[in-house]
Amino acid sequence: MKPVKRTILCFVIMIMILVSTGCGGRSATNFKGDAGKIRVMLFDRGSIPSGEGTLTDNRWINFLKEEAKNQGIEVEYIPVPRNQSTEKVITMMGANNAPDIFYLYEREFFLKFASLGGLLDYSDLLETYGENVLKLYEGKDILKYGKVDGRQYGIPSIRQDRKHYGAFIRKDWLDILDIEPPTDKESLVTVLKAFRDEDPGNVGDKLIPMQIPFDSTAFTDANRTTDLMRSFLSTSIEEEKTMLPVFRPGFKEYMAYLNKLYREDLIHKEFPTFSYAKNREQVMQGIVGFFNDNATLVGTEGFYGTLKKNVPTAELLPLEVYDHDDGSYYKLEHPPFGFYLMTPKSSKSPESVVKYIDLLCREDIAWKLSFGIEGEHYTLDDYGAPIPIDFEYNSKTLDYTGEDLRLIARPEMMLNADAKRSLDESKAEMDPYREFNKMVDELGKRDAVQPFVQLTEIKTISRYMPQLIKLSDQYWVKLITAEDFDSMYEEFIVQLNKNGADKIIEEMKDLGGK
Image (tube, rainbow, N blue to C red; front, side, top):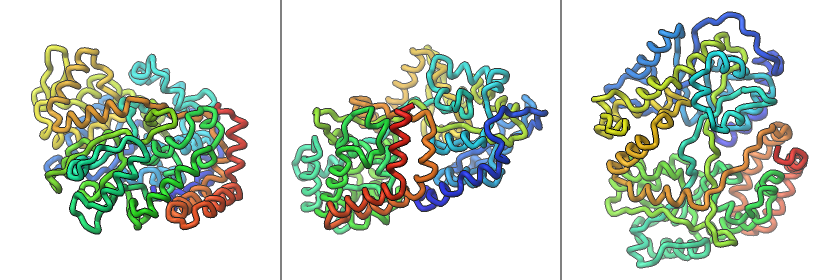
């Protein structure tokens, strides 16, 4: 979501939810009947292969509809553009027409929806209709992240791969210049200057030595430079529980580092005008020397493969470069959960909702949506692992929608240890970027740090965060581009406190990380 839109939405979110829920609070839902008809959100990624139908009319959708019908449930799928999902969901919640099943990744919105009484309490329903769901989460300390005051208002998805962001450099450029990869922040600057001065890719004025994000999410862990930011901060859990990143010791040095890169022409002068999609396009065009991105995305045909098609000699190298004072390269990993599955309190079909979620977690359903049809998409080996027959065929006939349809179900968790190892080995053998991805995986796990997750809502965030997001968006650019950095930073801190940052920190300290 664009920062400006998010700011506007944050201002109106409480009013919208109060209107849609009738200010009902979090009292237990009174289940009277079950209409049997539900609406389910479905990400629209604009990626349905030719010949496979449409997002809401294809073989997997129809298979799932038929299975739901056998349970007495009629399902309508509601497409929501992936890149606009948060604002669309908030708008639908405010208008009281959100799907019976929807999902968001942002914890702050989940907590706000729940605290204002906008969500269905799943607690008793799961006990009655959620046998497969509870079995999936058995022995895992995940469901607690979907609870507020001891009640289950959301079902967090289980995140299997917790690698977050990685750092990547053009190895072919290093080879052309005959220089070693950087190993810390200081040597990174030296390499970036060499890229700037020598233009090893011969890309001319399009050259971007280092790519950085365009907006203020860089002040949070949601940003691609979060590991760079954290390399300037201490690893104190107490600090993380009680202080916003911008007030932690070392944050000023982080911004000063980026300011230095900008002033030395190592960051593109027009970086604030580049969207995330544009950033990725620039990398795949072969004009970026060093960048940070999703660790699981880069080593794919759609990303690395596109780069290779555009620049056949291009070679990427994952590396550790954001050194801490103790010599380690700590990397923030994802929390153990992904998105939050939620249902509006106003849903007329609460029982069918949970029956449908439970259906998705049934082994045969989750298996088919994940691995496809035996003999067409996979064969079973001696360990019982579903070995893909043809990755390219599967991508065109299966992978385009299965993950979004099965939601919280994780069929790979249903495999025994031998079968899972066999499947992983088979995928690795067929992966054209297997050595690259193996290195990404090893680096991502080394010195990995789990983020602190605030279980209790910080109420001052709802009040002050809209203007703070707007300020942060403005000062992200101002601080990086400032000629007088120190004066601009002092101004930034003053403005933050004028707009409630000190009040948020005060509440964070009172809560003490609860």
